[in-house]
Length: 95
Image (cartoon, rainbow, N blue to C red):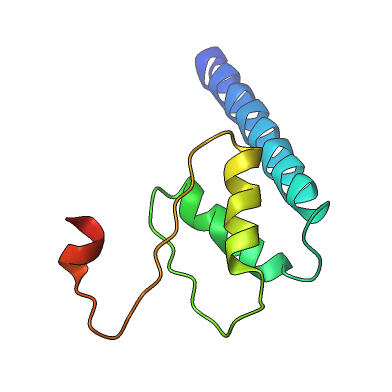
């Protein structure tokens, strides 16, 4: 490995460690409000970091809205919620 590859690997390692700490900080911040939904939070972060979308479904009372609201506040971004109905079409959501 030459010098430039060593610096690149070192810089990459630092970036990974910094992002891992940031992810842990986000999980800890959400954990101050939400208890018992670690898998949901983990999957939300995976969707967020991969640039994808996440659709949360479940029975009432699982703290879906609270979780997303906490995540939005933690990363300082916007939040909106859509209540689905049986007659809703994709165009109703994405325009």
